[in-house]
Image (cartoon, rainbow, N blue to C red):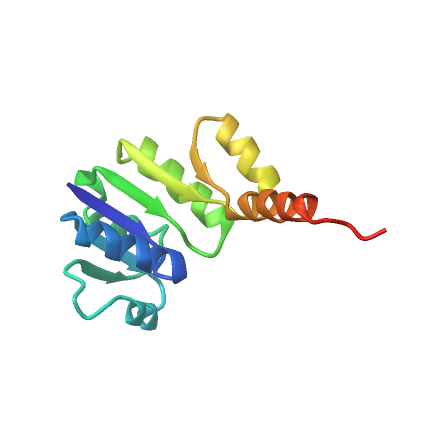
Length: 137
């Protein structure tokens, strides 16, 4: 199984590590080479420095043979475009995309994209925690 992880920040680096530890072949793309320092020394995957929208970089990382693609850059717009590219141009069967804006996450999820929105999760957890507190009168 081959996965392409786009974005090697706090999220992408851990996803790449976990998939590689599970035996996946993993390629990581990031436009900042220093981001690869987040990967452990034991990481067995490949690193590709370049922009997520550069189709040559995507091909070099094996997007055309990928079973899965995780899109987790710091930009929602970039993530949405790359996700659609992975699905429509490269026919990746499993594309999971991080979107920080909850409104956009709902819209694109409704359009069939597999979206993870950590902001919505935080809102839900914080609201639930406040509601569970005893309020002093």
